[in-house]
Length: 462
Image (cartoon, rainbow, N blue to C red):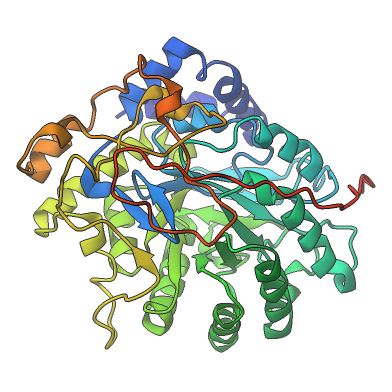
């Protein structure tokens, strides 16, 4: 049992939202301190070429990301990076600041290792958050922006509300997620229909070639869900994030009266949606799985069911800051057991469908291949943002001529990040043109073009 799990009974005596605010303060002010960050990164970051992957033109040094909802205001990016995440999703962000729903609105179900939240898109508004992100971006790992609708906005104005946030944030994100599936904004889920999805992604694709994703509910009717996903693909979406929280309160013994449920109680529903989507769309779109993932075995199962990437959130609350490391180290062992040299070889292996391979949605480096020019290097300074970044990660073995076994690489995975390296060696491959696979070189430099939309910030509060 980890130190965190030993202390968690005492932590859980605190109000859930207050405990989150304390964690935010530490991740914002303590973990980013130079020596503390070095220590944390050395403890939690797993660097192994077998886990490096490329999805929608973005490079990831591991497939485990943070789901939206934890860092709503982009205040914890540096601290969270040191915990070993391969990517971070910020938000949900709305155009106007909003307080969210009345408190208390976040609840733990400790026995079921689940959360129930009725937060209501509480955030500081796109103008403040984007200003904060502009000081960090481009960043050393991919940053996603989860875009939501203000509660006060009429349904008829929803499209423009989403468009305003997208335009304002295009210069500070690597990918964008449209959230139509939160149960905590009245009538938001009504937008999960074929007509609105077509309008939404046609609009978004007219503004950018950066990756676009739709986050869906686990509570949709199967046939309607398939129609909505089909239309989103036809309208230009790069992928689907499955799933958001559920309002099926039968999954908990003693649920609260409102709010979406995440964590272990969501696991089966989320996994079932992934299976349905994989069998229907695996060769046509990217799938990212989230919901009840709190172990390497669960993450690996989602990957074998067709997920190119996975995200965690509730598991972090119940398992603690070492969860990313545990999952990534476990993935290396599971790959070895199944005889796979690279994570890409496992994607989709558990799908019961006639499709044998995924031909277009994901590009990955050749499995098991190691060369001096196709390496990935991560340093502690890679966890720090710079304005001129190339995303280059390097394993300790890249100077050797022959590849090492997965077990040897696993032993290397706990090596700390080199704090002496200059931040100039790290550049994020972020561009407003169509994302391209990075060329095989030790340094990849891609320019980032910022847009300045003439959109007035709606500052009206609830």
